[in-house]
Image (cartoon, rainbow, N blue to C red; front, side):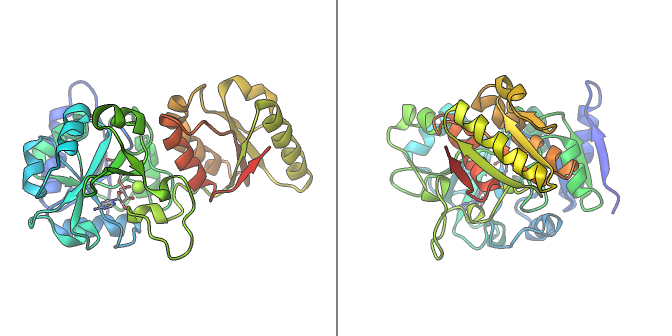
Length: 347
Ligand code: TXA
Ligand code: MG
């Protein structure tokens, strides 16, 4: 298959959106930008079109997809009940990087939901995403547009790297604003449960509806037999080729520890890199040091791009600084811990 790559500029948006919508209506696959990461879209009410998503990504069939809507009215077609706390959070955070889990209606094929009775719904704020959903006339099923298990794509080039020849079209809308996937909240529980942390933080949600809890899979490695509520959280995700190790402690201790590990690796012929705050860039003895910027917010935006950059230069090991697990730091640490397979050295 030849994948058509279309870059948006100020004049061609409508033409490209119409072309993409025609592909989607015929059951094809189109990757498109959202404010979080690039999505791999198909008609979410067409089981056969969605099957192609699983094939292109190499995604296990028990891992359900998120349906993306472009108008709040579409929510009422695909879910059966909307609890009051969900309504309040929708008023505050939609359109935006928040996904809700609801009981599904009959028009949503069960194969799209990994056989569950629930469906994940997201109303993105990205203008291209909204226009594309509305032009297609149906909710779009869209997982992140990466090969299953690889870091999510935050640039169209990442999508091209993973999906070229496997999908019909890629819309290049530039770099994504947030860079980490949406916050997922299960509204089928009395007290809403965060299944995946994102840019809409626990603190922001609690300001609107009071108590919210994290699913255990958000902050710790589950033991054998334990099942996360979001099936996708059980996979070792975001995994680049290199071994990632997180080093946690005071800046002084972290720098000392990482530099000693770097010199050991160098002696053993390993190519090792570092991810750190902008202000610490010069403190590490490696040629391969990538910056997180200076906060968890900037780290979220560049994290997946950094992981892919290390892959491009075939790095064997990456040592990473850590963040406080509050606000967006929770989401950044969740992705970092998963990328590291929970290898953390405390110093
Ligand atoms: O920001 C995002 O959410 C991006 C953009 C493209 O919108 N999408 C995304 O989709 O990250 P994906 O498929 O890569 O991640 C969806 C996660 C998976 O972990 C999946 O298991 C979980 O959502 N999920 C989907 N439907 C669910 C359901 N009914 N119950 C529990 N978890 C669900
Ligand atoms: Mg994904």
